[in-house]
Length: 208
Image (tube, rainbow, N blue to C red; front, top):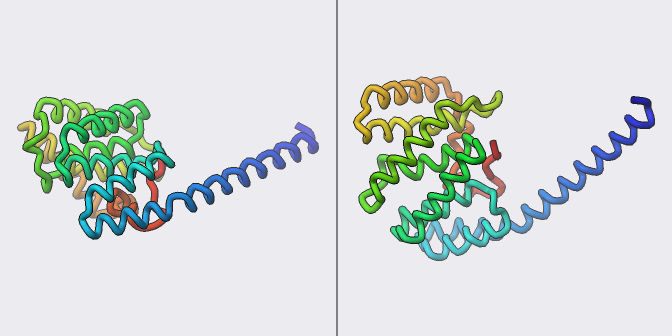
């Protein structure tokens, strides 16, 4: 490659970076007022209003997993609307697996196996089938350097899945591994993310 070709490539790279920065700025300007409405509605526990704002956010950013997870959270765990919420959760699980994204799968499994939540209305067999598939994919995943946090952050939900499935040995192993990672602080930054963290402006999940 001669110097003229190298210069041309640099110019194209600069143009692409500028276009990307403009797109990010435009998206941020669009989404910040919606985030403010979500924060306000969540604080008032006005779940229908929060859901409406989340769905507006999804119209602007359909592949933002934070909003996908919050949509499922509101429908299933706040409003207890199973007919509407289960299809949302199924799509989240399927998209997470299709994308092979540990971040997405971590969000999905934490909607299915959280010891603080009531799952009495959930179809048990389907819940466990999704939990098994997600657990297997997450544990087998090899995230890129610096991207391990989302995998480890899901260990609590995976341990809960194994516990409820009667596999105490696996549950204890995963629980100990998660505790060790937490002790080392390996996912301190990642653990700040999620549906509640996204209520702070400008916080979104990285895809991958």
